[in-house]
Length: 261
Image 1: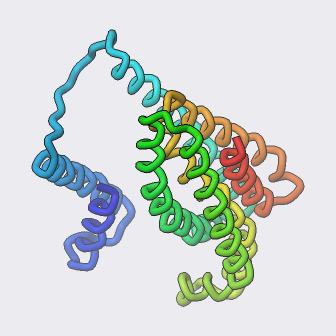
Image 2 (image 1 turned 90 degrees about the horizontal axis):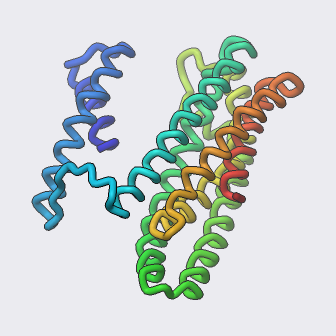
């Protein structure tokens, strides 16, 4: 669904069907997301025996579990938006270009966490769920520990490489136009800090997917919420003494805190 929303907009822009203006892009994302969801629903119904019907059976344990988990993630999503909005507010106060530099930094780090973390989660999650269903907790714990160790080693290597080669990476991805050496330097300095959010971000992928399939399935929402609240607090505390670097440190520390918790 997410892939469809982005590809749809990109195709329209390249085909000249849309003017490259932000309101049009926003509308295109919404429309193509809905179409992507519809396509995903059709594929799901045709390729599986799953069928869905709306229900409000409050007496069902499964229904109450979904409501509890969904409510937790809704609160978590709201806190995440507040944390990012507050960080961007402080970045705006820091001066012209800081918001953009943060955005460019996230554009490098967040896709890396997705590209590395999702395959790990999709590999570990189903295996852990099967072991949990059989109540084979010893083997499930070993699987999680091995996956976490592999994830940490991978993340540290990638974070180190990104830290050493930040400037060439920034020039390669965002070079040209008005993105001069000063902009490269600011973005690179923030990327060095943001790169060390990768270990925590990848650990979250490995741990959250399995924990959703256990009796403690409401814990991930709570853990994410703790991190977002910490992000807000750290942003408030670190911005005054460290400026834009404090904003990057606050984000990185909050991601690591979520992984540790």
